Image (cartoon, rainbow over all chains, first blue to last red; front, side, top):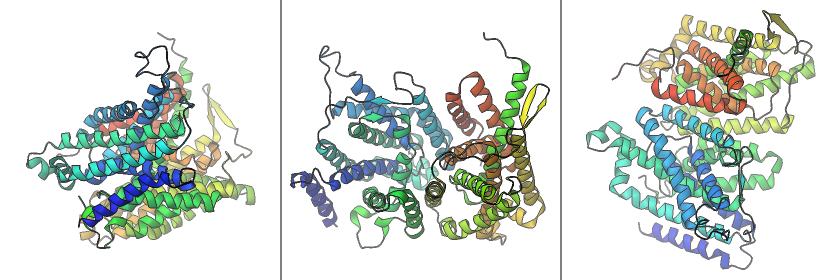
Length: 324
Length: 297
């Protein structure tokens, strides 16, 4: 079914051209869409390790936070280019090298932690282990002294913020890139190996797949995507602190969005991120005092009535929606 | 090297740690039961404990019911609430193979409980102050607080009752069988929904008992519960997942670790050490400190 590709492609182009609409950049919808992109990227990251890899990780917020901190530290300390252009403090706003390095920091951390965790722990024990890991990282950053700014965190050089336009386009570009990458990955040898590991680890290993290597690669890849999302968020908030970027909601909400959209599908995380963020934001606007209560109810209702995810409802939309 | 503090300090630290840790322990016993039958990490347990604490406070302030006396109300209410929560929220999800669904329902329940408490009682820190809150006993140069000792006794009694129930009654044996192997248990005619509901009822009732202990000992706020859930998970892993007495012992060990780290290293490191121990136990002794190693298949 080729038309679903066209549909998503047209949607992406329309979203990319949206800022040209007069007044769109200053509208509420614009910042709403930016947050949808951030959550969609995070949901894709979680989906890679948990949906396709079958390893439920409850520590993905740690990688988001690591990426956010990496950007803030590199940026505010001018570490990257400071020596090259010494006397001129050069602020690299949306510096692609910084963003990639932030992802890399998270990916390296994931590989280092994943080696013992993924080789030793399975199923629920892996989930518990990653939850513990996330809390340890948070405490390490609180006790990091001047390097991490302690319990307060780091304020990024704030003079450059003028418009949400670069955030929007970067967010959209990353969302599209991650979705396309996921699609290609899941068609590749490696993606098939990952799904084989999820479905039956023993059979996969009997067929010559190095299961540990595949799982660690997926864990690191997922962390890389989360780290880049964290970097993007630093450029938005201009402040990272242990309680804001290591907040458990950076793991719980993407997890929920993925499940609502459809675990182990390529487009499910994006659909889930859009719908759940719309519900949360609507609640925030309509019933500000009770919006968290509404969020709780929304999660419970979604799980009671849509346990398989939206994209698996039989609308006759195969193609991109298909599992794997 | 630093000078060792006098032995009374060690006694005092051990006592404080053990008394405080018993509260993690009783939360862990509830988690252990729910995890045993449903394989669900019930993250909302801490929020249930704080909800119970607010309930105890409301009973005390509105009707003047003594917090410890309110156990006779809180525990039956907890049993009923647990049963209802299972039947209303988890019954359908328990039949699904994908366990993310039950985990997310637990998360939704946690959000809901935390924020309902904020709406009803406000987000500020609350506490229950009775005539005996500040009283304590001095023995051998160390001081024990009356409320903490009562909390410890509640934890011991709660765990003891649950163990008696699991060992001596037929229903309890069914719960234990289901924890070991749900498929085999249902082939023997044990209804999965019934054992799950019983595990939930007992788990929430224990949260109620822990809520009484928390209300009388600590100041609390609606969002204090989550850290309790995490600490209870650590206690659970220390004691060996699936063991009731182990969960209580794990809580006490965690309390001791925290008390010592707090005194010798510093308060800001207690959580890192607690979770570090947690990871180490999961990796090198996943059957818990007291469990026998599993036979390799």
